[in-house]
Length: 220
Image 1 (cartoon, rainbow, N blue to C red):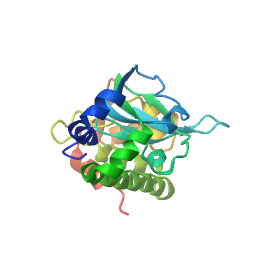
Image 2: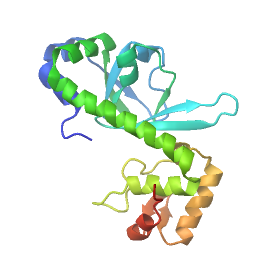
Image 3: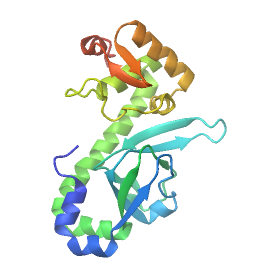
Image 4: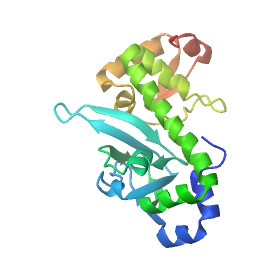
C-alpha cells in the first residue's frame, strides 16, 4: 500500500470536485456494493472496511474471490480505462465506507493531474501483478501450497496472532480466495495444526511457528 492513498491526492488537488461530486456510501457486512451496471458509471475509493471482489459459476455456485479491497484501494480501474461493464460481484466483509465519484470525473483527473497518475498507474500495475499471481497459483500450486502462500503473505510482524487482510474471515471466504471449498480447506488447516505451524482460535488462524511456515513455502 502506498504511503499516500489516491484519495489523499484527490482531496488535496480537487477540493471542489470532492464537495460537488463525492458521495459517501455505507454498507453493512455481507451487503452488495453497488451493481456491475452502476459501477460502469461510478468509481470509488475504500475509506474503511474490506470488500471481496468475486466471480460466481452459475452452474455450480462456486465462488472465486479475485481480490479483497481495503482502506486506500479503489475500484474499478479496468472500467475506468476501457469503459466496459465488469461482471464482478462486490460484497462487504465488514462494515464498509466508500466515497464514490462519476467515472468521467475521475477520467478528467487522469488528464489534468500527473500527481494523481503517479499513484494511479503503479496501483494498476499492482492489481495486474496480483491477478497474474492468482492465475499462476491456481495453475501451478496445490491447495495446501496456496493456503501456505496466503497465510505467509498476510503475516503481521507486529502482531503474529493477527493476520493482516484475512484476519477473522470465515473459512468459506478463505477457501474462495485460494480456489477451493470449505471442506477441503478445513482438511489442510487441520494438517497445519497437526504440524505445529498454526493454531485456530474462534475460527481465527494464528501463526504458531513462523519459521516452519516459511520453510513450507513452495518454490517457484
